[in-house]
Each structure stands twice: as structure tokens, then as C-alpha cells.
Length: 470
Image (cartoon, rainbow, N blue to C red; front, top):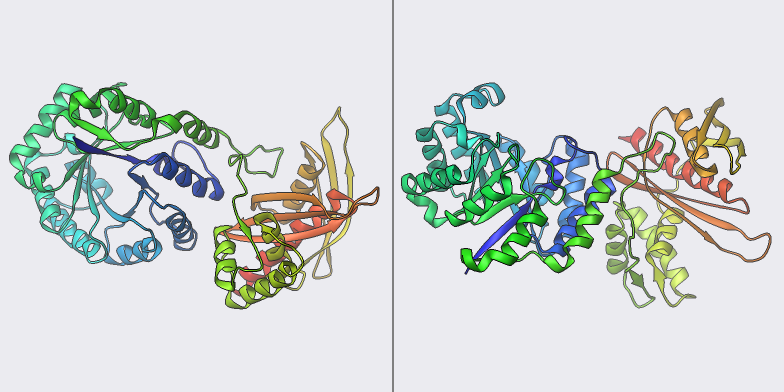
């Protein structure tokens, strides 16, 4: 039985067909890894600071699947991408180029001879970093066959171990795709020494059928999407292989038993979007608190747990968190991840207050939208904001956004009681993201809305302080 590798491209569709928050971009690869897809493909690096942090975060959490990231067509891009990806357990670099004459000239501004030279240079540079390099020939079904064969030979000779050909237009039929792949094997015998992959657009609703035809004609890696938009469907192709793989002489590692639950979670994240009436970024749900620490854990273990929560602390802040952790662990048997969040919010990056809360007024009822009126002070100047929201906390955070004139991704919002009785104190932890980095703030008050506002402003002041220093 030949093993068919399923390479999920859901993340590469983000931004074009739907939007995901930073947190969702970290959560979806975790779910795909649990599903046991062979490869998880991520978007490449466009904004070095944000995208490098995103790739590093995914690389540290994915344990079983290959993590694949495309490079730009420069050696510098290869270096930047590899530095972000190198901590992955199974890293892969991808070299993506068009091989059709029109796209080569208008998208890449290269003639055929120059493109062949670039393929050789960039694939070689990638192979200097890792043994797992994939060459992706976009629009291969509309290319000049002679050039396509030469491009694939060049990539293989330069060290690529996976060659993927793409039907970008989705205009090819299954039997035509089979003939196309047979011609590739006939004219490029070197393909027998590597893995041939395919990607198909679903323009004619034939992508899944083309995938099966490709498998019958020698393809061993299929690009599919868990959230299918005009691509091969991951759930469809996995079930087809589970039911008919024996007749094709192939098998697939994807866990079809867990498919429905995980696909529903991914679809929910891809289909939801941020409401204009709420500062919350919808998507990630049912996050299980699996982490627990005790007084027996050392500093390295604690700071690794902090890193898993998404924080990127300096050495000084790490020491402050460790000291605070030790004090709490001395009187508490187990410390959960939510409590660790509170420790980070309390101990890490204590900064001067750029924004200070002056006043706030909240109105709420069960018949109308909540309204918040808020004033802050910054450098002696009073700033005012008013907003309607889906609830008092929504309205308060939107009023803050109106004052700031920008939206920070609200990564997490936690409320818990710290005392009992009618005058119980409520503690809130708010986690905001700016340029991909996570900042947390903590607030305590008998008024839960007040503690929420305090926590938001605490996290905000950390963002403003650090970004002013950069």
C-alpha cells in the first residue's frame, strides 16, 4: 500500500476568502495536527515581525504534522522564513513559482531562462537549510510542456523532494488530468525518485474526482482544505480514501473518526467574523484548560508554560513572573493556566500609565443596546468616547476603541471572583494582541465592568509603552 499524504491549505486561503484572528491562526493548526494530516501549510512572510511570530508559535505547538511555509524568490527571504520555521519538529520550505508564460512575465517578471536559474538558486538555498523542500509549479496545466519538464528537472536536480503541479483554473477533467500526469512521468523519469503532489481548483466541481484520478496515475500528495473554498475538500477526499483506498492500492493517515467534530470547529472559526457592535474577535471556542503547574516545577518549566500561553517575555519579565509564581505556589497546590495568565498580567512588564481612567458611565437593559460613556487622561489631555454595544463590557471596550482610534485583537477575556459575599471582588484578565505579540492586563473591583476596563487599560499601557520604545 502506498501512503497518500494530505497537505492542508486552509491557512493559505485566509485573507483571500475569509479572515482569521491571530489566535485562530494558532488554533486551526493544532486541530489539524490532532486530525493527523500529513502537512499543514501556512501563509508566507509578508510582515516580518508579525508573520515570523505566527510561524514560530505554530511550529512550537504542532507535534506530528509537517509544517510547510513558502519562501520568496530571494535568498534573503529563505533565511527569514527558515529562522521563523526552524524550531518545528518537521519543517518544510516551499518554492512557489508560475510555469505558464503569461504568469511568469506578469506576476514574476521573468523570462523562461531566468526563471530556471531562479528555481535552481532558491531550491538550492532551501536545501541548505532542510532536506524537506517542495517545488510548486503553479498553473502547470496551462504551461508549455517543454518548459514545465525542464523546470521540474531543475528543481529535482537542485534537491527538491516533493514536486507539486497545480491546475489553477480548474478547467481540466479527471481523465485529462490522468493523461497529463502520465506525460510528466514519461518525460521526467526523475519524478520516480521524489513525491509527486497535485493541487486542483474546484471551478467545475471536479476537484475531488481529479484528485482520485491523480492518485491512480501516481500522485502521492494531495493539497486539500478543511474549510473548502474552490479547492479539493479535506473531509471528502479523506473519506473517499478510507472507503476506496484498497481498490486504489493506497492508504491515508487522516483520522476520519474525529473528522466531523474537528471540521465543524474549523468551519466555525472560518465562518465567523468580528461584529461591528462588539470588540470581541469571534472564532476560537471550547478551549480546554489542560495545563497545571505545582511548586515542584522549575523556572524553565514555568516559562515554557508561559510561552505556550502565547507570551514573549524578556529575561527581566520572565524573572518577575517566576518570583511571583514561587510566592503563589508556596501556598497553593496546583496553578492552572488561567491563574498563570493572572500572574503574567500582574508581574510582567509593569510600565508607567500612558492612559489613566477618569470616569465611566454604563447604561444597560434587556430592551435596548448598552451604552458606555468614558473619559481617559493622556499627558494632561482629557479624551472622551461614547459607544453602543451588545452588553456593558462590549460597550465599554468599544468606547475605549473610539478614544484610541484603533482596534486591538482581544485574544482572551477572563472573569473570576476572588472574594465571597455581597461585596465580592471580581478579577478580570484581558489579553490584547498588537503586531502579533500578546499583552495582558489585570483589574480588580467590586464592579465587574470596572475591573474589565482597568484590565483593558493595563494591557493597553503595556502596548503603548513597548511600541514607543521600538
